[in-house]
Image (cartoon, rainbow over all chains, first blue to last red; front, side, top):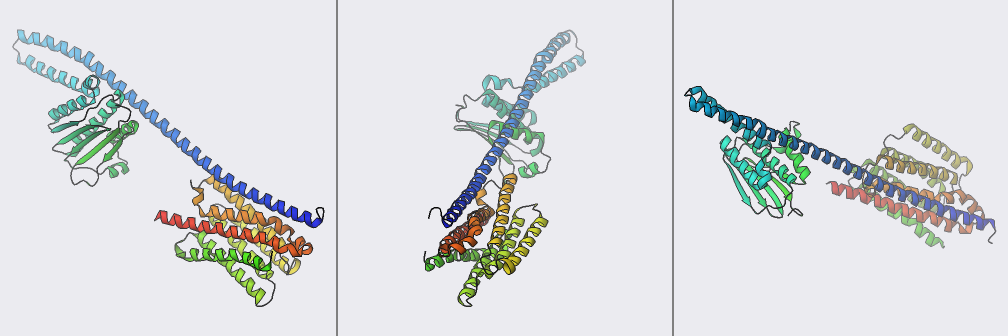
Length: 263
Length: 219
């Protein structure tokens, strides 16, 4: 029986069938696992590329800020110092002479010294390094309000502690850019800046101007450097940036940064 | 294995396929071409099974003639489904394969094996389908058309054909010998074919369910 051809054929059919079925199942299993692996590799690669882009952006921004710091220091120390010395000299001359030209020159020099200080402060606000983000933003609001005649109201809630200096600087730049955009484009009659610190740091810039459609701006290909820089910085911070849509009047921009481990 | 049990098992796959046909033909025009062709293929299977029963019970004729014709049309449909699923597939080669199979099957039916089970045609068909199934999987790996393979209906259809035709290849190869030497056991051997046919029908039903899920998630 065991050696009979019929038995052998039956055995061959059985083994062959089982073998072929196992092969088919192996092919299908290989397909599924290989495809999952390929997808996972693709995702990893995309993540690496994204991380690399983020690091490149970070490095570029740091380089920008270092350059601004250097320029601010040079303006304040070198040019500012020389202008102050020149002013002292002109003050001395004006005491000895009653020539009206000297008074005019003194006034122009005073204006120039103010401009240099303003440019230096805009480049690198010393208030930010000495007193922190909230004070720096408040001071910026007061300064812009007095120079541009646009009423800018500053509102603060909660206490912000322990945020890294580099993040404070980025948030400051975002707020600065938002205020600049409002002044340049919105035709607003007032601007409100809110800083709320609790579990998240929330910064809101709200104006009553003409408003704009963020989707149109982003899709038009004419996205200005301002919007680009705001989005870059938000992305690097890990913050979310929301532009309130379907608003009847004006613009409201909200920046939300989680403060999990910062405070 | 009694005859009643054998016929009971043999009729399960056509019943599952009949349900699949109904699912396919609901909102037929809105379905993807692959699903439409699959519906036609399942309809063809159900009709051929019904025809074979009529030939056997009413006309007391040989069912093998019905199945031989069915196999020719079935291979044509399978090749068209692969043509739709795989972009860039060589149409000329496909046409040549189908034409050569048709000529061989007709010659086999009329001259070689005639009224007996046309196992030579079945072996030819199995090898062709297996090769196309493997090629389709290779194409899936290289193209990666989707991140969720299990939601692709064609993945389930190809798996069904791979399992069925690989499982029955050895059976088709030795069926002639088995009929000559172990006729009393042929029903047992052919039950394997019927069980694999049930598995094929179930996996095709899963493919149709995936298609319905995809339509639902898109809407």
